Amino acid sequence: MIGDAVPAIATAVPIGIAFGVILERTGLGDPRVIAGQLTGRDFTVVRVMFGAIVTAMLGVVWGSAAGWIDLSSIAVPPTDIAAQLIGAVIFGGGFALAALCPGTACVAASSGRRDGIAAVAGMLGGTAITAVVWPVLGGVTAAAPREGALLPDDLGLPLWSVVVAVTVMGVAATTLGRRIDSRGSARAWRITATETAALVLAVAFVVVDERTGLSHGRLAGIASEITREADHVEALDLAEWIRAGEPGLRIIDVREDLEAATYLIPGAEAVAIESLTTIRVAAGERVVLYSEGGAHAAQAWVLLRARGVANAFVLKDGLAAWEDEVLAPLRPAVADDTARARYSRARHLSIWFGGMPRLVPLPDEVRPTREPAGRRRRNTC
Image (cartoon, rainbow, N blue to C red):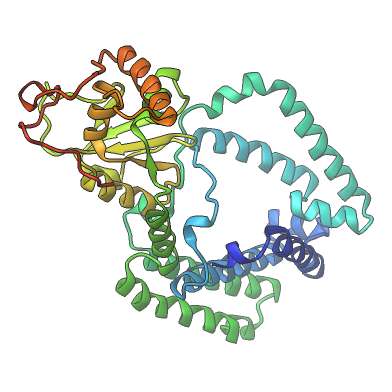
């Protein structure tokens, strides 16, 4: 993957420089251009930004389809409607007052414009003030924002439909903006070669997305994590997280047809696998999935990872491991320091959870599990 092969700074610095140059050359470092956009007299901002959005979107989806980009490695900011609406009001007010946004303010300041320097100073001052009053303001953002929320998932539409819709909107907006900026010139209604190419790429992506379902890049990333067992968590580790009251820990039982009296790991919630396509996962939550042996949990994990939930794990060997290692750990017969240390750790956890540490193996008929006699530990996910 590109992200693994190239250090972030090697791409971030050139892209940042190029972005600044483009903003300056397109006139977005001039407050008069932005003020003209806000008053409906100059649509340069809409044309440039929509062009950038469509170009980046098509580049990402086609790069993923070709296997060049791993979508799961791309950071998706959490979605918190209440906090973001408040931020939009504050940002919009400052944008209208200075006629500069953070990016264009930096460009204007680097060009030596005094209004740009003043805007940057205002941003730095506002950041400092926010840090001081954050104990009060921070409560607004504590409403469990959604992690990895994407427009196709929220709308219940395939990715290709959103790609086509955004591209058509972009071409329409740039064409209309060009018409207004040209003061009614008939030639302004003509779609340019670049806009035509964007429409062709968007329509062609319909076929690719319908055939692949998930992007090759995201599938490759998921497969790599499964191979490395990066998605697994040990039963003793989970027990320690629960005992320590680990912040953001969320345990989900995905076994089928559970009854009200069925045993659940302490703090777990029972969720049907089909519900994981729409379940809300808060930013910062660590989701641990488990089932009887592991197969259903692995399926559930793939569903969450396909949605972009990065902080999801599977309890290794499922509930069987919890019973064997936490509820009824067995003292090792071999005098091995590592094994004895692990048993000591398991024994203390077992007592805390109300389990029964064992000195010798128990007969199957009194084995402290809910499964039929003769069940043996399976080496599964």
